[in-house]
Amino acid sequence: MPHPPVIQHGGDRACYQPSRDLVCVPPAQSFTSREEYYSTLFHELGHASGHESRLARKGITDGALRFGSHGYSREELVAEMVAAFLSGHTGIAAATVDNSAAYLASWLNALKADHRMLVLAAAQAQKAADFILGAALDPPPEELAA
Image (tube, rainbow, N blue to C red; front, side, top):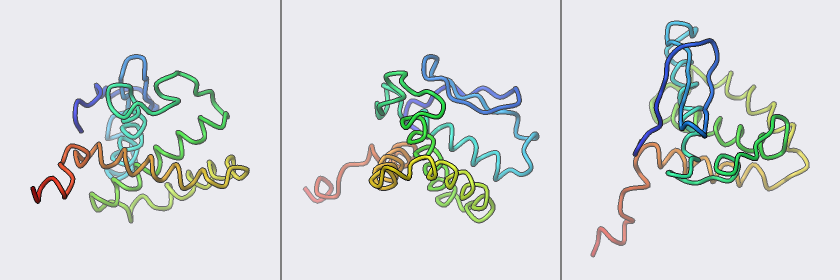
């Protein structure tokens, strides 16, 4: 991930703090599996990708996310999709798919009134996953041919 946030291990819950550009994640040994640890880390890195120094995603940059709000639901959906995309990329998707599906379903229920949200969240999540993987830094194919 280009210019990643600080990652701090400790405590009993994972979170991203935009004001400090800090990802907090419990120690790996506190998770039921290595896959669950990485899936959680990927989720938080998904939030961090929205920082103003990275993709500057609304909600992360303006501090307007309040638990239960539409924007909060959207951001959680984006972050969980990032985790799913990165888990698939690293080959751990099969071990985390049940938890991810349950988590996504809970946020999709909150977004039923917005039929475009899934597509918009998926597009933002793909952009974030590409950024985290460094793909956003690669030149477009047409530039490679020149």
